[in-house]
Length: 402
Ligand SMILES: Cc1ncc(COP(=O)(O)O)c(C=O)c1O
Image 1: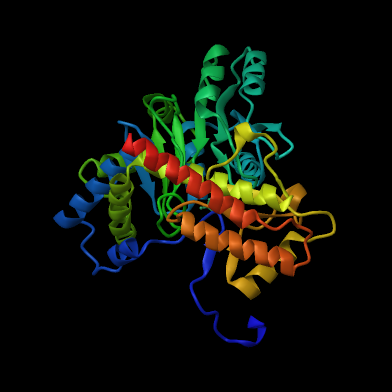
Image 2: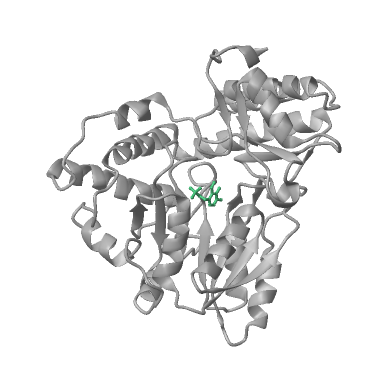
C-alpha cells in the first residue's frame, strides 16, 4: 500500500533497542547556539553533566565522557587498565559479548570466552568456577554485559560481584550497561564494578555519539601500571581537565546541553519510577508475545530484559523479511538479528522515552504486521498487554489510595 507513496504519514515507531526516540525537550536543548568550550558557561554545563552522571551510575567517583560511541568506551576500559597479553574473561551472551571479545583480541589481549547458547544471561557460578581454576591469577579482568541487547537477556551484576569475591580473585570487573543504564537499576559503587561502560543513545534518551567510563579506585590504580597504548582515550588527560570543568579536546558541546536536560528529566520522573516503567513495558510486551504463541529468545524468566524483547520467528518465516514488511506497511522499526539467530528473530525495543500508549501502538502494529506476513499467531496479544497495563496501574492507584 505505502509502496507507492513518497511519504510515510504519522510518526515513525522507532522500536529498535537504541538509538531511542529523543524527547522534544532534549532536542530543543541541543538546538541552542554554540558556546565557547573554554569559557565559564561551558564549565558550568560540564559540571552539571559530570556530577549528574554520577547519580545515574550511582557512584561518587568520576565518570569520564567520551565523544565516541559505546565501542569507544569499551576500548577505553581496556587500554587504560590492561597491558599487552593480559587475559580477560568475557561472557559471550550474544553478539555484543562476541564483539567485545574480538576487540580484546585486536588490542593484543587474550580473551578467555565463556560461551552461552545466546538464550540466557551470564551465570555467576560459571564465572566463579573459572576464577577458582585460575590459581595464578592470570585473568586480569572479568567482562560482562549487564544487558545483552542482541538477545534480550539481563545478567545479575550484584551476584557476579559476589561470585568474584567468593573466588577471592583480584581481577577487575568491567560491566557494559549500554542498553541498561537509566532503564534498570545499576549501582556502580555498591556492586563493586571497576569500569562501567555506558552510551548516550538508549536509556539516556540522547542521540548516539557519547559514551562513558565510570571508574573505581582500583581501576584508577590499575591505570598507573597499564601498558596498552592510549592517547585519545587516556583517563589521565580527561580527569585532569574535568576537574576544572573542561575537556582535553573540543567536546560535543550541544550533546552536553542535551545531556544536562536528560539527567534532569530522569530525576524529575524519579529513577525508581523510570525502572518500574521499563519493567512494566517489558512485561506487557512479553505477555503480548506469549499470547501470540511466539517464543522469546531469552528462555529463562530470571534473565528477562527490561529494555528489549527478542522474538523468535516460527519455522519458515524470515525475521528480516518481516521487519521490512512492518516498516513498509506500518512505519515501525525493530532491531535486526545476529549470529545463530540471523533471519530468525526480530527485537522489540521498549526503552528510553516510551510509555504504555507508545507500546500499545507498537504492539498493535506488530500484531497487524505478523498477520499480514502470514505468521501463524493467535490474536489478542495487544489486548493482553493492555489488560496487564490496566491491572498494573490500578494496583498502583489502589496502593496510593491506601
Ligand atoms: C550492549 C551493547 N554494547 C555495545 C554496543 C556498541 O555500542 P555503539 O554501537 O554505540 O558503539 C551496543 C550497541 O548497541 C550495545 O547494545
